[in-house]
Image (cartoon, rainbow, N blue to C red; front, side):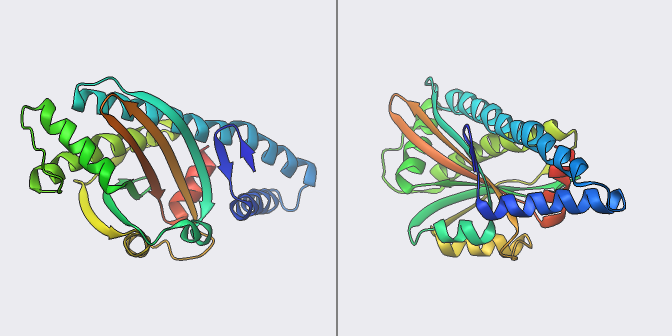
Length: 239
């Protein structure tokens, strides 16, 4: 199902609706289906609207942070939000080399925000950041300085998404220092899913995709918000 820039995969839509209906039936001792219908309608209008707004607001913050880091204006291209399942997202993972950096968050809800770059995008962004700080580095390899710059970008970009998510549902979250990894997308993501107890094929995943454009920086990034089932359930309840 597609709503504006928000896409809900067929299986995740089934899971969300089943959860809403079951909660309504249990909470009202088998009350009428009309009540459940209103709940679903409210989720569609209010909940999905909030998720879509989270993606847009976070992308704007991320663009502003990157502009500050590189000293160059940044325009936002496509912003899309996807609600999908672990099984469906695994089918989309590629056997390609990627750059990963992420931040674990904890509090009322917990999980990890993962930022995924192509190596070219990671190099371009890190070089621009270093140049802005007066430390030009034209080498086409990810040395310690470039990795440090990418981690700083992650710290700001992921925090834009985590803070926007937390503020939208009125919770307080703590974030860890960024971690860095590189390797085959399928292998790295499989390990991250396991580390965060996301192993059931029907576990729901939020994906935010944004395209950012700037003179000298043609950069796109993908953000995955991976939360264990209890946290994703609380998120939908609060929305």
